[in-house]
Image (cartoon, rainbow, N blue to C red; front, side, top):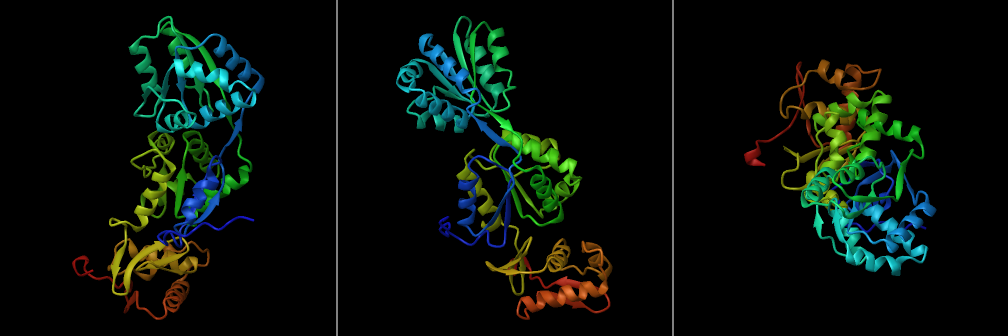
Length: 379
């Protein structure tokens, strides 16, 4: 039986968060749920661990017999998996002094964290978290004649082996895991369409390969334009754990939120701050500060569920808070094939009813509707 996540805050109440991730999705889900979020998981890729265990064990034994001068750790998950494989093969005690005697360099903080967790210290960490910075650093330092062991990330094609060999190093290449296909491609495709339809409030990415595959799935599902449009209008938050993960999103024309530190905890805090911090995009109205979610609204921190048409009406009114929006424009804002003036009237009436009669939406006779906002200075 799963233990419910302990509630820390309700900042994300009413938010549906999509995680197109496989690794550590449970940990990330629990962290978001502690702030009130509802989480959907749709892994765009899976990690296939310990690929070619026999070969990896043989390579590890070769490093024990022929210790490397430099060990390159490109990912935290890969370095941890290597240590686990060595331990299971009874090689940990023999490998530990080898690593202690080598210069260990890491491609970013997650790799450094795994190195420290295993009881070692990284001698240098790439601030940009890129293989290019790591490559340039070692080549500039001079590795001619040195033995360099490289632990690769899942896709493997980072060019490090070739660059180090060209610089005169002898390279031992270690591939610990590979990226595999998603458990259910249809679920991934459906998740992109859900974002495009406005059913998701935030999408969080923790790896560049998964981000790239999710973008490709959105293209195949003809949902990418809708995703990008909603992201540009602020209707969905796209977030990436770091600049490398953000790369495929930026290439697709989507600018994600990136936390100051490349950690899952920092990613969660950035999302919480986005929705509940001092700079959160809340609209001051006569009935409270308004935030719009995919399944309802938040007024002064209290969530009220609304039907989809009500959310669409409020989003249209919120584009220019306080301005009158014509009935024709509100009809155009409804996604239903049966959108009509009557549908607008029903949506407004049901929204007012759900709010217990609070007059958030004002009717402007013969012109349309507007949000009943107050001046920011008076809020």
